[in-house]
Image (cartoon, rainbow, N blue to C red; front, top):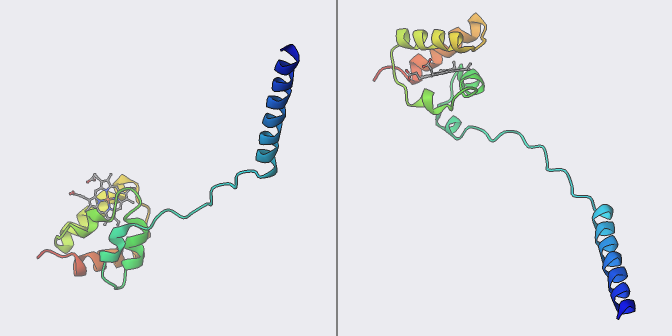
Length: 110
Ligand code: HEC
């Protein structure tokens, strides 16, 4: 009885060692580093000058859905863009101008 118990323990330890050995021999691959999924709303933005900057910057803090569902005048877009600057957006004046042109053209007041 005692001997059988010991054999069982040895067998169990052996099986555990084999199992662990198997794990060590085949370490789990690190999860692949993937780029963040592109914003699905980027598809909705029509091609045009300034689009690249809008896609690149305007989906950083919120989704591009905020952009595509907004239709307002050029003056209102200028105000919105300045509010985004206050929110922390960092753009050169040239980028601002391009994006304002794009937004006013494609997302202007109906
Ligand atoms: C630094 C973060 C940040 C970036 C970058 C940013 N936004 Fe925003 N945006 C916000 C925050 C915060 C709000 C909500 C508060 C507000 O309306 O100011 C917002 C709200 C909005 C709204 C909704 C306003 C409303 O009246 O409902 C629009 C439209 C918008 N953003 C457009 C843009 C555009 C266009 C860009 C790119 C030029 C942009 N955002 C980039 C932070 C950001």
